[in-house]
Image (tube, rainbow, N blue to C red; front, side, top):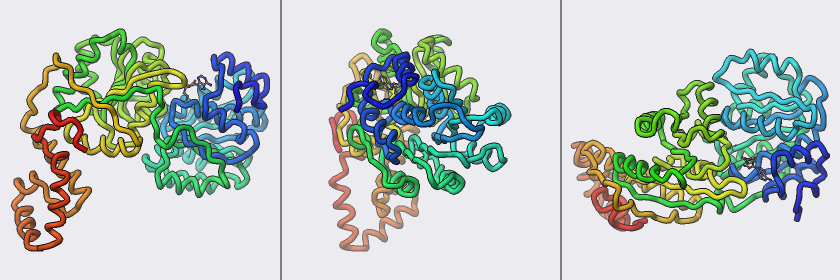
Length: 459
Ligand code: AMP
């Protein structure tokens, strides 16, 4: 077992940079991955963000690249979002500060002029989102002939975001002989497939079992009947300014994020809160993230895409104002707290319509999220008619997704066509019986009025 960074065959320049960063001991993924990467092996790393995975691949990579050479790049790191790409490049700069290695970060959303100029000066390492890399490659600004390292970070997110086509194109234009590293927080079927296309006899290094939230994160789940009560609960939690000193509030859409932001800004004033989502300009996002990192603002409201790869240490709390629909995002979200050797808390608000996703998340992380009760002094609002309808509709949709034969209560009431279908279905004797039998067993978990709050855990 490697106890210290000195035990790896890293050079003095790198060891000094690690010491400057304040790292005293390699994290588990670093202990497992650095030696095989130095030995030239392909690696498949299953590690969530917050485990120190970036240094696990960057340190041996800069060790092998050593110093600036030709104009053409020798390493390419692909990342799903600009935030993550920027984060990785910052880490490269940090760890290679005593070398003359040159790196550049490429991403869309900005004109390519400055990026092209940087490429022209010569680079050793490129960090890029797949689309921008391909664009600049196809326009002839990048030569791949000297590439010897290819890294794919957060491969699961790349698949979710639909980058598979771009990645295949990139694989066609890089030299065959190279070292490949792939990192992913979860191991979905698509990640498996891309790993098969990409890696040669990889060494698998895994920290924690698949999609296990870091043990340093305390999780809790509040069943909340509606949006207004979620806001009341958020407000209640935020009163504790000492404990909740630096937090990220995750929302599932830009609209919700904007609304929560406006609400909090009215409540706490301009300096205390910022919002990041895909509609915010690149510079605004960078400014917000920096202000949050430096501790100038207490609350960051974010959507999943915007927060991808965000590396902020000392986040006291992650609040999932909405349960993520892409369930893997749960692991990524809560990975923002409890990072490398620190503790944190992740709190999830769950409406009856979101119960379905919590069940899936619990299956994914192979643990139940402990339930918390809404404190007595939080006002529980009545669910307005529209919201009640929306919840009922969502639950019906979920049931239908699980069983295409299912015709929900909402559906039946609302649509004459559905009633006719139901009548036809009733005629279909035995198979229809089986279907309804199956739903009897599940009934509790899906009724809206049936006491989502009253019943502890019904799934
Ligand atoms: P990552 O999983 O790469 O996003 O890293 C999470 C955080 O852990 C970053 O803030 C790193 O600076 C930090 N980190 C990485 N390696 C170590 C280490 N060996 N000791 C302490 N902190 C580390």
